[in-house]
Image 1: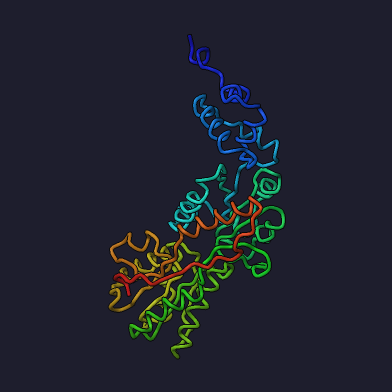
Image 2: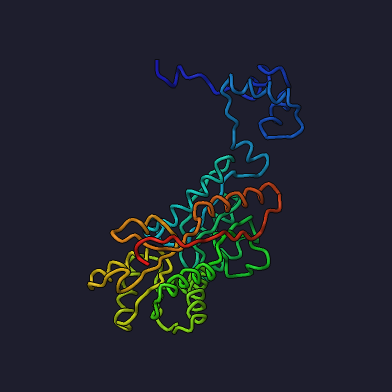
Length: 340
């Protein structure tokens, strides 16, 4: 006889009610988390559920309360960038930790850097998810920046549009953190400090560049050596070559991500320059990329895993109808290693 013929049918709500000696509606209230159930009844029904190995029908519950029990993680980046940058791995790890106590599942949506595809837009607005988490926001993401007008949304990083009015987001003070990193280079006696900046259409890129400029101006040093990357290793290498060609006398570089910094380090070694002897290098993120090469990067630590966890917890609070803290700014610090 086949397994399909011998397999017992899944227990029903009615069978749980009979086992517990209560009504079907009482079991339904327990399964749906109602507070109108006494501790004694809750324990009795819970024991019956465990004994019968009853699994609530989430689809039926969703139809009843119009919840999908799904959350979208929207990342407006190409696939190679998402899977190649350890920052995203840390954020997703934190989000998964934050969602673990809930019944919500996470759906990944990789969208275009300037605008999501019509398919993604239809999915997000079509009642398929109860809320969304948006990471790596660009200024061209006009649809994503207004998504919170339709469903609950929490951004990872400050969104550019109406950020101070009604958006929920988790971030670090990127300008202050970058200034802290450049202050460290200044304290080492470096005088010609360049930056490999992040994209000029992203708040993190904009703010970290502003922090670099602010620190140099406060120190009375020129802030004229800048090259823009896209947070990738390839762009870090390209920008480092450009800066060296423009200013052979530079003695330090503040890089807006560890991944770009590893690209910069490869070029410096290729040209026979010592680190930090000839040129000091400061990264940003404190990701695995900072310690994955021959040179251990001095970097600005941001708590990426904790940021992801806080994003998830904030969204869950919104979905429960609560009013969580709208803006969460987390602490950064310098992690000193070999490069500066």
